[in-house]
Length: 75
Image 1: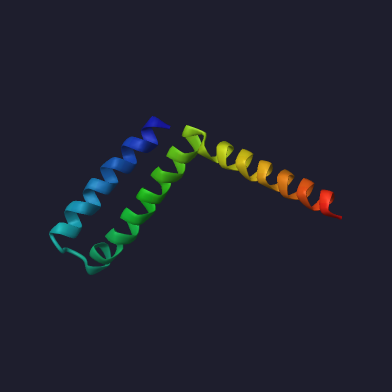
Image 2: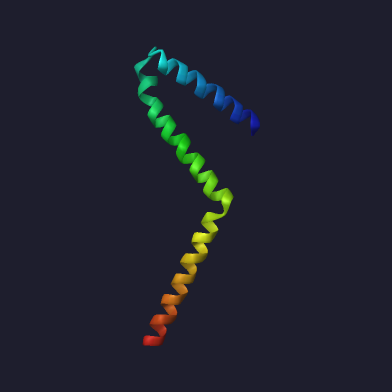
């Protein structure tokens, strides 16, 4: 796993250097997409590792139960 991370960092640095040198328009055009994907993946990993998904699921479950109890008491 660490090897993949290091290879990814090295490839990102290489792509970044090639984009700065404007060797290929495709690499320059792809860098914003690559940056967006990296930031999105980092945010997803942080949310999963911090347990925020469990907190949101617990809150949603609580709200659903409260709404169900509210409607069962009305009808």
